[in-house]
Length: 259
Image (cartoon, rainbow, N blue to C red; front, top):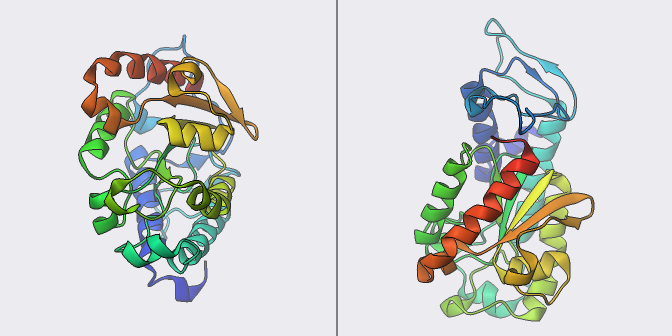
């Protein structure tokens, strides 16, 4: 990481989130491809599960410096550089003029799981973080039900700017943002993506099928396993769909090896 990145709020947030995750877990050894317990194994305390990383790094309580890792440092730096590109983007002039700020993404910079939504709303536009309103609170409860936390996963949207009046994203806006979220996912390199809602699923999977037709089974995006479910905002309007969403989340948990 460059020294001049230290003052960037995106970099600070990514570093703090990663270090907090490691500290809570008491991680001393990190292996990117270490397997989590199989579904048949006894349930483990998620706070003690080692977060897989790309290479191995040793850390003990006697170390003078906090745990670091070159590959994760590189991811943080790449995400910060991409966030800066997004921050300065004016390809969608209407969105650039109406936004308070861009909403890049938040969470573990080296996650197993990404949640992929549609676009920022009013609360997200004001705070600069995805899923912080009522829908975000519901997503938090879903993540907690998986025995995870927001710091364990990464959350991002198709669009990085709020559409005026929370209208649906336009095709040209999706096209403009596609290089950003595709590069973001390439850097994050998750094992799993959970698409929240139709726009996220259709955009990522390049399909016109509805959530109802896509949910309940695994899909593939460039070697990443994808589960599709309903957007939390939809669940607030149609609570009867929560049962189906929980079925989808249980499918995701089984595939991730979470009991």
